[in-house]
Length: 261
Image 1 (cartoon, one colour):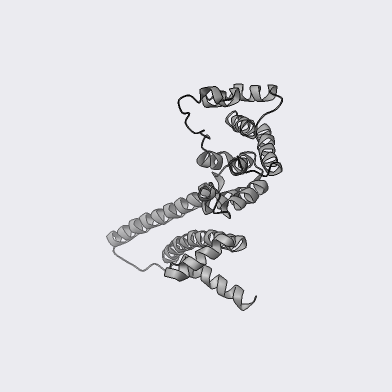
Image 2 (cartoon, one colour):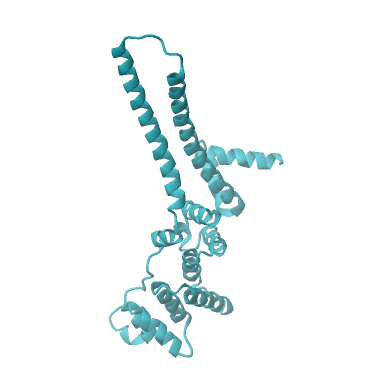
């Protein structure tokens, strides 16, 4: 590992510890925004710290429990029966408290890991796509597909989209969103891919950002975590993407945890 790598690792630690300030902090955050691998290292370091913190708490509680057990096993000196009874009650209560803390900590760790599901991550990040509000006199310019979507008649949207031979990029995107609302991930993924391909072919960006973000969420729901991570990182690394701030480090860590399980 060269010195530049060492320096950057030190910067990561300093950044997490809140030791960077002013121009130095701004420069480092700019570097983070531009450097995907550095952002991944920061995410990994955060996750590692959280794990170490929880493990350390477990170890402390376990140490208290072991110390109490050793004290119980130590040679017993002759004491007043009343004092002995009182000490035994204190020890029992202390052991019960320590065991409860161990159980609680273990339960929290287990719950956070095993209760995490693709459906929960999807639901906590998904919001129905809303079209801009119609102005007076615009009604006649709205296609049948768009009108059905505005009426939240998602079944009609996909039916109309299938019947119409030539659909606009916007209509294809609305059909993809409707499939998501109807719980048909396979069809939603196909339509989102069409939107992205058509935008790239036409050299436009009409619904490409939207399609990539919602496609990533649909991949999560469909348990295609590698595809989801690829799109999420792409969105996160582009500050000009309107969905840039929606892709948080927490979201990416959750998808990674789902992938590791």
